[in-house]
Amino acid sequence: MWNEFYAALPLFLISASAIGAMLLDAFIKDSRRAILLFSTLALGVVAVASVLVFQHEGTGFAGMIKTGGYPSFFDILFALGGIMTMLSAHPYLERNNFEFDEFYTMVLFAVSGMMLIAHANNLLVVFIGIEVMSISFYVLAGYLRTSILSIEAALKYFLLGAFATGFLLYGMALIYGATGSLGFPAISAAVSSGTVEFPTLLLIGIGLLIIGLGFKAAVFPFHVWAPDVYQGSPTVVTAFMSTAGKAAAFSAFLPLISILMPANAPKIQMLLAVIAAASMLVGNISAVVQSNIKRMLAYSSVAHAGYIMMGLVANSERGLSGTMYYLATYLFMQVGAFVVVSVLETKAGKNLEIKDYIGLSKTHPLFAALMAVFMFSLAGIPPFAGFFGKYYLFTAAIEAGYTWLTLVGVLSSVISVYFYIGLVVAMYFQDPEEGVEKYEAKAGLAGLTLIVATAGVFIIGLLPVIISNITDSLRLVAQSF
Image 1 (cartoon, one colour):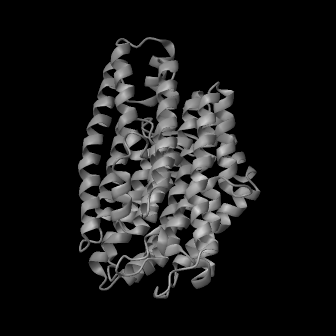
Image 2 (image 1 turned 120 degrees about the vertical axis):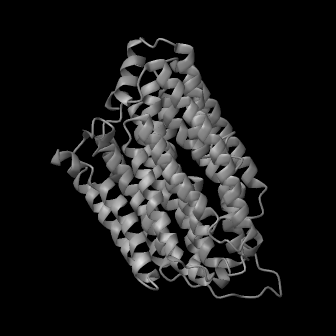
Image 3 (image 1 turned 30 degrees about the vertical axis):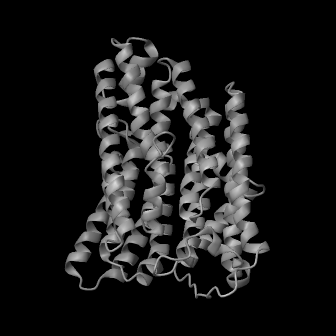
């Protein structure tokens, strides 16, 4: 019994921390800095606890959750994403006169939902985790309640999210009806043994499940909410949603697809391949014509979700470990880019157009250099981390016999170079128009986030074995789920 509690320690810690932050808010007057410090330290403790229980792979609490190994990897990822978000949020919210205790509490609850998704060994636990995360995101998206764009983003995300939840829940119900269980092991046993009583029902359930999780991951054609929500939400919230939130969706995708793949494997693989190809092309082509930098990064995140799905299509050890590698590198690349945007953004919500970045190397050389690093990595240019992420996923797709999908990935990467490098060209090789007012940009605590993100992009890029060795040690073959 105590071994179960120890192995599930990160889950207990994050849940207790979220509740503790609410109590601090209730009993301590003007507790903003106290809750920021408490929340950041709490996530640090959660990350340390996840490292400590990494070797305790197994299940617990009547087989409802998984512990150690695979979940611990994502626990560390989510905790790190939460810390980077909180540090960068402090100066951003302070500048907008909107730094309230609730923000940090909601981030903690969002992380708790993400961790529950990664630990899930039962469809019911997946659903609970997704709802905890989603409700937190709905609130965070509309956090700037005096901004029409923020309120619009929250409303759109809530309405479409609730609609997608219906697909997800109905898909789970059909899978239960077809296999007679909500537990991953029982579903896997029924599918692999071919004893599913209603195979058509199972196939429909898998399709609905892909729709529900595809919405959370923002893949085509379930991405329509992303540009408006990412643009209207507070920039630091967008950074959190587009990275940790996407990783949470794929932490559910990975085991579920591996479990369900033996049933109609060619059909499921082809469906995922088409979604991946369309996401890469639509995301990158749409990003080319954007004038707002947040919308550009939003569409590019759709494309990156397509790259990540290539690992699901491969459904091999290399594909699954490549997916986890890319999720780790994407966290640093995307958070870093959005944090630079948040630092340069003014109180009135200005400096969000790509044209505002013209000549940035002359007015803010440090931020221009950091943005260039993140753009190069997102474009997949060596030796930055993004290059090896794409390399692992492309090779996994080729080994699985999906060479055409790899060619689509390469083509879409070439398209992405236009707007990623185009931003760098604007910052370094174009002069701003006369009469443009200079503005002061201070990073504050966001500087720590930028340091971590930049270090991650360089270290993982120069030493990719750091992440690949971890993912390989998790034995991410279908049987491990």
